[in-house]
Length: 288
Image 1 (tube, rainbow, N blue to C red):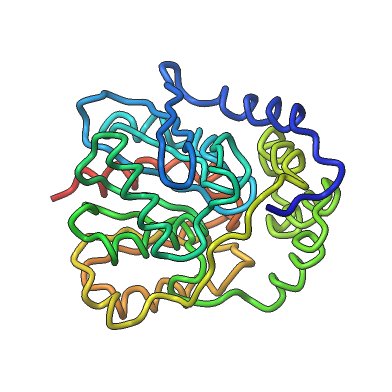
Image 2: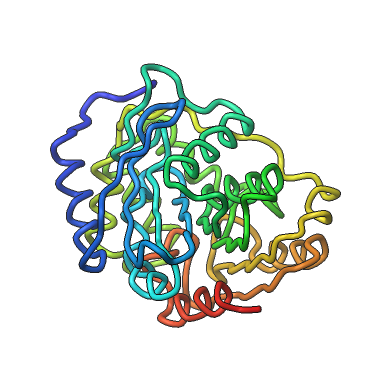
């Protein structure tokens, strides 16, 4: 685990709880044991509704970041949003054991679904969480019903060089100032939610594990995916070429719907997305 000096765990928890307070009433906090430690899950919606597992983006996105969508999604699903192991949040690692490969992530998600009593689930992921969700759908098709991906990274197109160059100082030595400057640049001057932005700043220096990375899924594997997929890309994303992401997904996935959301950036999803996003997601989950 690699951290940086200056991290304040109490300030992080205060910022985390402030964002979590935006979730709908009736939210439950669950802890699920896995081979990689205890995973924190925030749940809402009827306990007998079909489960929907939500995976956040990388960094300090955390489960709390789904607050703008959780209430509406909970009308049709049992929403289960997780903190990634080894990343900022309230999941507690098992010593220095954390996922290091895609196979490890699959093992983690299998154990998570088992612990939640779910034989299968719908999956939703944003950014890096979309990459994890897509890989899991390819490796565990029997446990994956429907899949929605919000501006997923490294699934259908690579990162823009300008994005990586802009992110590099923050990645090498994260500080609150660098985190804020990067996110304000990526949002193109749009105002991120101040509480969400404060959480990103408070996570600078969190003792995180190196995230699992790897190549994009193989084209042949994507062509064989039987699950229905909804891909939503952010028109103003500076992370990758949004239209290229949508075009490549349509060319490879046999059962995919795509949508390009105007006036939203990559990091603006899902918490500051247009109002119709939740309606689009619930319609997809409830469809034939």
